[in-house]
Each structure stands twice: as structure tokens, then as C-alpha cells.
Amino acid sequence: MKINVSIIAWMLIGALALPIVSATAQPAADPEKTFDELCKRVQRGKADVTEADVISLINQARTLGHPFAAESALKLYSAAHPSASPQLILPMARNAMLAGDYRAAAARYKSYLRAAPAGRESSDAAAALYTILIQFLGSESEAFQIMKTDGEKYRGSDAAKRFDIWFLDKCQAAGDFGACVKRLVSIYGDKMEPERERYFHGHSLAWAMESIKRPG
Image 1 (cartoon, rainbow, N blue to C red):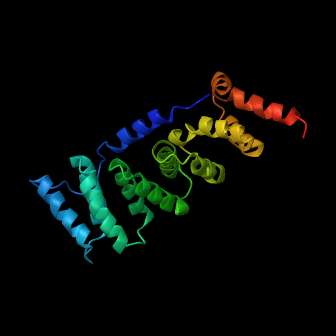
Image 2: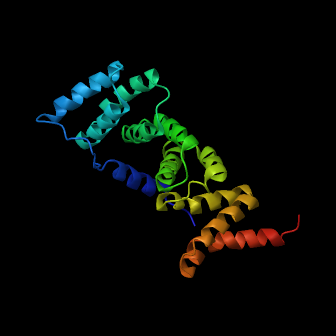
């Protein structure tokens, strides 16, 4: 069964575009002016600009619909602060994706995932990375290798699990029996309804069983 990655891509971008709740106080009378001033401060990379300020900029950009302006500031900030924390890298990756800078977004998601523990948030980040690589950068082989290496670790969300079918199809196309079986073990360990297991993954299980029977 083929997965429609383009649908996942637009669902993901739509979710990223939703305003998020922030503990930071909302901008005063003129949100646009507040955003512009903060954007200039981040661009200049002054020592008094904290990661909290940068996250505030990203949140304001999302609320006001200005990911492009924020991205210009973030590029300059990143050049001056190459060792940003994972807590900052993740929202920076989301902003780059909203701004359509998919290469920057992919690089930031990879950087975040190198140190991120397994969990729902990191699994959602992995799903975003898969979407970028497959749908926007045409790097299916890289997406496959990342799923093969770290896919089990970052499979803790529905968004990440939506790529199971795509991954299994690629395993079959590559004749990668081991990777296919490993993923099937995880899938069947989730104990979804038998009807759904057969509908979504029965063909992959049948391929794996046939591969066992096949000589050599």
C-alpha cells in the first residue's frame, strides 16, 4: 500500500502554522512594532540577546505570519551562535519549514535529533524531517537510511508511524529483508486491531514470509 506523503506534508505545515501558547507575555499595543524591534535585535546578535528572546521571535512570527522575516534574523543568529540548545534548534527548524527553506529546516531537524531522547516530540520532529526529505528535497534514499538507522527510536508518535508503510514498501523494493522484519515486529507489537494490521501491513508480512521460503 502506498502512502500519500504530500497529504502528510500539507497536514504538517498546517499544524506548524497554528499559533502556540507561550508563557511569555503577549506583545504590547503594537505587535508588529514589537516584532520588528526584536527581529533587529536578533539580527545584530548582541550579547544581551538570549535564547528565550529568539524563541519569542519565532512565536511572534508564527502568530503574525512572518516566518520569512524571522528566518532572515535566525540565519544571522545561527552564524554567530553555532551551539544553540536543542530547545532552540527545534523551533528554529519549524520556522525554516514554514518559510520554505527546506534545506535549513532539514539541517536543523537533523541537528536536533542527534541529541534528542526518544519520545513524542522527537518522533514528531523525525516525521517532519522525513516529510522534507521525501516531499520537498527528493532525498528518498536519505530518508530511508535515517528510518533504517533511527526509525525505531523515533517512532513514538502517530506522525512518525504514518511512514511505516512507506518504509516497508522501500524495504521490499530494496530487498532489505532484515529492516522489513525489524519494523514489522515493532508494528505488530503495537497491537492494533487485526483488521487494520492486515489492511495496512498484510502485504509486507506476506512478502517477508515469502522471502523466508525463497531459496538463497
